[in-house]
Length: 489
Ligand code: HEM
Ligand code: HEM
Image (spheres, rainbow, N blue to C red):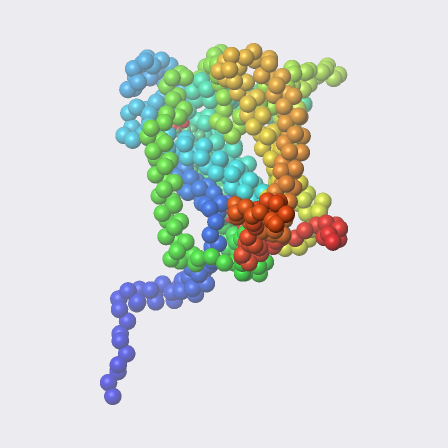
């Protein structure tokens, strides 16, 4: 009898070879079918991921041409207005990247825009997790991984921003120096240690360079991987809806549906960032000039994400106290303490909420923000603090643009810093409660149809149409606090 089995094709043999050594088939069969729920807000995490990839790609290109050295050179490159000016090699190479390297300016701008979008993506992604409560058990550790990414991202941005050694970023470094010097007892040592001597020294660009291209991206890449591994391990959270429970995930499989969407979305993010880099100037260092410790430019702002830290310092009165012959510069020291506290509050929030609510249960269904009025109000109040401080960080710009005195703006920010979060908290909480009542109205009486009916005794009423089962389920599938349930008839 002849053998009817079809011999394996060359492709199958190659696949077998790899499977025998790497176990790809078993791994793929399990994970390629991982289910991804469909909701637009899940794209925010992807924006972070793809802009991080763009940062790494463009960053590597920049390393080919950037010289992280503060040795002084005389510039003779393509940007004629600075011809013959003495400057650091770092600044000169940034000018070369911008004017003499093919595609250099585009890639530099792409890198900078990607950095801005990356941090914006992280903040919005974080707020969406905050408002929907996806940080609750068992995802607290993943929240912490994300929080570390945000924290590192802020410093990675600051270090990158400082590399070109231009007048703007040098002014930012002077700010960092001032913050370090305000630390009691060890301030001078910290500053000397960071700058390798008296500010600005000759080492800071090279030091920031190692941190910027090696240490921090390495840690961040590892954290991103751990973050995504945990997303797969915990499975996605999902919004309540028909058929969705705490034990299942409803959506499309990773392969082919999600992979195709994600691939397309990567190119979309890359494309939008490239258009921004091509048409919108960002950080035109040539117009600021090289950094000189005896000069400072007006309108000196950090990138937007550190604006709140700058705001903290700008609105502080210049308080100083003298203790046993030592001067404490409270005007800077207090912001230096408050800045990390604002960040630590975010990192610790999942634990604080679980403790305050005595909630030890696992949660895989997301909350609608209105159903958690206190949390939503805290989130909104936090955002208001952030925005008020951002305005404080740009008090000079706000004053000149709106033709106000800088003192008026500073005082408005000082008062707003305390008044705005309190007002925002109260208003947001009331709005949430109002929306809950609206939901309750919908569930009990149905949707208004716009059809008016006249009753026999002359009264006009609007007809309501009951919600379908799916909508009813979605609106009622949330836990209510025990005390409310008890009070209900
Ligand atoms: C999360 C990641 C990153 C952020 C937020 C970030 C941010 C920045 C920023 C804001 C600048 C200033 C750009 C300018 O001149 O306008 C910069 C410069 C630079 N970055 Fe990054 N970066 C990141 C990752 C990387 C990586 C992974 C590399 C290299 C492997 C890199 C290499 C560079 C280099 C060489 C410069 C100086 C060149 C220049 O300023 O023209 N960056 N970075
Ligand atoms: C480099 C930065 C980051 C990247 C690339 C990233 C990426 C992602 C992706 C792709 C997901 C799955 C899709 C989604 O639920 O949106 C996710 C989930 C998550 N992220 Fe991030 N993220 C980053 C930063 C952050 C930050 C700053 C936080 C909060 C502080 C955070 C907290 C979370 C949490 C709690 C989940 C799990 C949510 C769930 O399972 O539904 N992430 N992240």
